[in-house]
Image 1 (tube, rainbow, N blue to C red):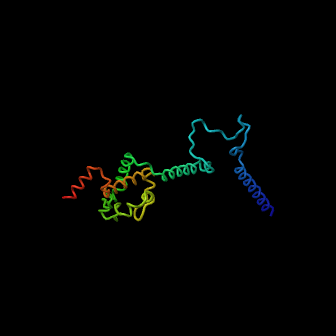
Image 2: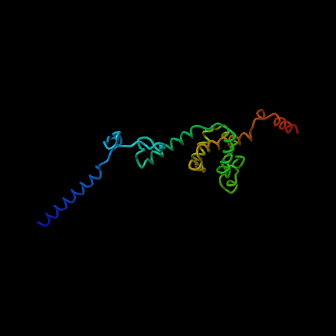
Image 3: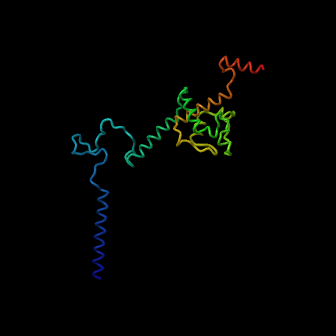
Length: 201
């Protein structure tokens, strides 16, 4: 009986010691953000960044996960901002769009955008032609969102094509549509005369 009581007392003391050590881990001697300290002349515990430091993350969660979550949110915000605003149409944008289209879209959509690309010719479902009225009349944002998220059997390209390149592809698709359905009145005079001469034959 005596041995049992001694064993129980020893266990209780050990458990109390473990609990105290656990609590010491939680209550470590450290400074919280914005806490004062007499260690530095400015009286602050947290130190200002070194000159020329580039801020990687901001906000309430920037201090968590070594600021990984703050970086991710900052990146998501930047991507979201890029996604909202299409760049102005320029020759450089169209050239970039053609290049990206040739890599990511042409295998299914074809060089003309008629949905008869090499992959479709080998048994994959044919995507719709860009030259149908529904897609000619669709807003640019619709095309951008389909590239981003996918549609039907097409998977999304958000993880492969950055927003600016998606807008470039949209601009190039519009150029493809115009190439197959340009109003004669909008053609340069020399081309208008050529079309008129072909019509008279």
